[in-house]
Image (cartoon, rainbow, N blue to C red; front, top):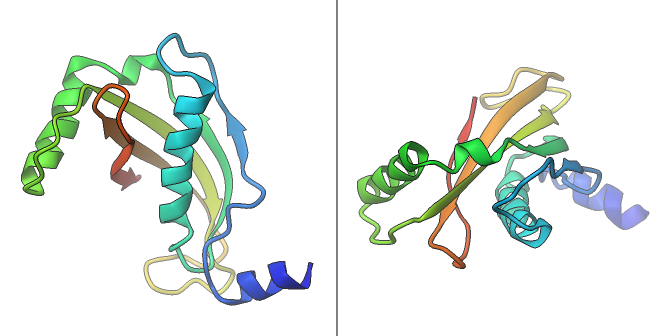
Length: 131
């Protein structure tokens, strides 16, 4: 237990107690979603002092031609070459640091969307996140 307090004290974002709602998908397995969630958690861990409370799968509706095109446009804008064939979006709720800081209002619950993309069967890449 002491170790946990030390990690929190270091100012990293915490994801230990996140509640995940996988919703219903005819496209993605729980393993597919977990792979995307791990990418989100890795990024979230860099959000100093924030605590992730929940992640919920949006819906299969987000994996459409328009959204996939948007993900590919983001990839091209960043001069990357991967061509995505799938995308996934999760909604999150998290709490900002008690004392605020940087761009955070103090002690506030935020809701953000997280968009990831991949080529079929490939590795998820976090493309954009925020309000």
